[in-house]
Image 1 (cartoon, rainbow, N blue to C red):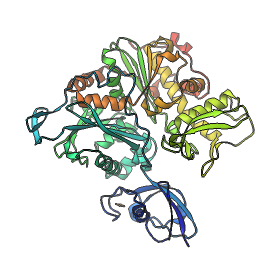
Image 2 (image 1 turned 90 degrees about the vertical axis):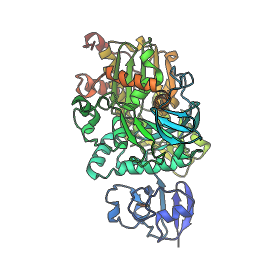
Image 3 (image 1 turned 180 degrees about the horizontal axis):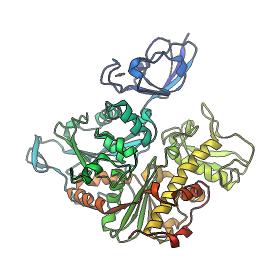
Image 4 (image 1 turned 120 degrees about the vertical axis):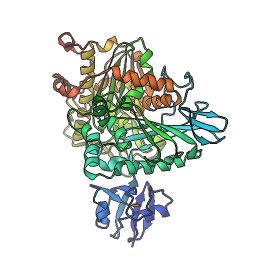
Length: 554
Ligand code: FES
């Protein structure tokens, strides 16, 4: 009598009665914990993708978990002859954008001016001694996304990247988008989401080839919700109209001079040097957060004469448009579809994800899978290719309906389970795309620009880096402009966080820059809904005729 257990893609036949945590340990899998299986720390969350009904009943310690999330220390397999598949919230190494490309503000050209310096064996933070050491001086930059987390460890004396890491944001058990997380954080209390993330960060930092106590500063970029939650602030106000961070409200009331944040690593449960500072980059406004601010630093928009746009496609897509004279920004609530969320066989860009798709003349698909392993699902760049190919071969129409009377399309059946695609998946992607297109149109209209007026269109983010430009233009995810103007730059947000970590001058520049950005509030724009409906269709996005009639903001 045994159970077939698949834990983080490792398979073992096990006997019932033992906790999932114990099985994980026997497989050599690191499950985050700081209570050693006592049901107290709530860090050992796993997602059960098959065999949920083969597990013991939920215990009171799990009352904060819904759906297929369980505490691995508190649930046992209780049914024989069953199959259970589960994984920790960090399923594996995601594709890391080690170097951002084509960025004018890259840290190679940066004059080093970090907040942490050395004077003999004295380590100084803003000129004040915080430690004595002759060892290296490290800093940590983090891009904290709703779906992914990217870390870079830097040597602050040389500017070199010492190590990096990335993983899925383990806060998914609180929902896949920012509104669900705000709701969860507000309802549950106890900073569970932050504590879980801190547990995963502790593991990631522990795997770096450096003593964590040599890390004296950390700079955090992230959307307003992720950033504020990480700093253990109340995020309730970001989820309510007019959608403002508590730091914005306090600044408006004169209680703080900036929306940036500073806290000790200890308070945030991070295993850095005890005197290390964690600095949260300033936000722009509302949902246009510190990640958008970091992107501005990465592309050096403060010193840019050309007209540029930055689009960082994610669960919340950030849009920035302008140059040194005038900058507009917006945040589009696209949802997680383009990151694989809410899609039948969707998954992040991990090994096993189909990342490229081609539909052949005989109706079969050719696919490319990350890591060259059997396919388990399809990630965002694969979804865009798939939509584009289905359109190109008239298998779907511009409304996203299957032209044949099929209820699903099997893209690849060579793995354990077939990877397929449905009309409801298309609907999710259409809505995500609609929000992005509406955001683009509103920002360009308000600025008084046509898409073709741009000099450069930066596609930022891990997702933007890997998507196929031709496919993206065909389905209407990005404007139909000259390919030569489109630069896929990778993770500009973490790049901006690195720049802020290495340069106090640039940090100060950003503090004043965010205050002169005009925030385009999409939710109150009269044309937003029409643009959204139009944007849900799979057609190339051309400049809007509405420009002549639009009210420009000067
Ligand atoms: S190990 Fe702490 S709650 Fe499970």
